[in-house]
Image (tube, rainbow, N blue to C red):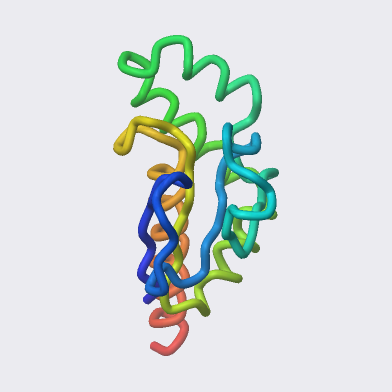
Length: 130
């Protein structure tokens, strides 16, 4: 099982971060392209521009609906399923995000999606053995 953590892009990278994935659609403010350390940037898997803009108008009251809508976007994006399979082989993955809110952000939702995909794959493998 892959250990998936989330971390702000502005936090210093650590050797135990594993495979570092930047999960925002837009480049983070103030980060230089030469100093920012990441292994992958699948910006096509970030929330759509429309969803992101809608959420940022009132994040406190829209969190639950944002989470639902973003999960729906991910579930209907074949590249998201492929990405989940790709990282399943990694022992540790760190999802990097720029938001100031450490609990209510797209990285938290993406982590939940990836963990659900991994659990579903594991369940399917066990089921096929029986």
